[in-house]
Image 1: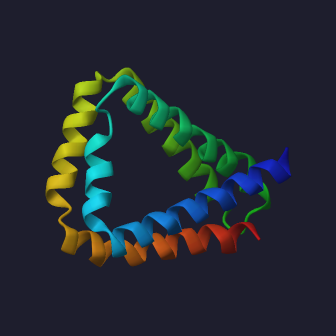
Image 2: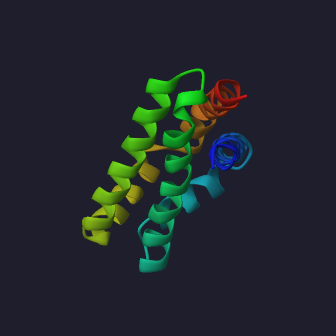
Length: 128
């Protein structure tokens, strides 16, 4: 179980790095994807349930990571916010996504893309 949790964290780190590349090289597409969050029941609940998988990996692998309190806190935060968004009417989640996409212009997405590389790298460092 522990090795599966570690692989989930590594996959999550790789995903976050991939998002960073998307934000850097195709910020318009990144905004389009962000705008879709919460737009349909399938997208909304699928996204939220999928978020809980790496969150569980973070919690389960926390004891063997280099940053146990951070992993556990982040995992529980991801699960808590996912549950909150599942219970919230979908239209509010979608409205938040639309507002976020409005704020995150292509220039801003490119500017913050290094944060995704750093965060993904920290996940790799902390679990290997």
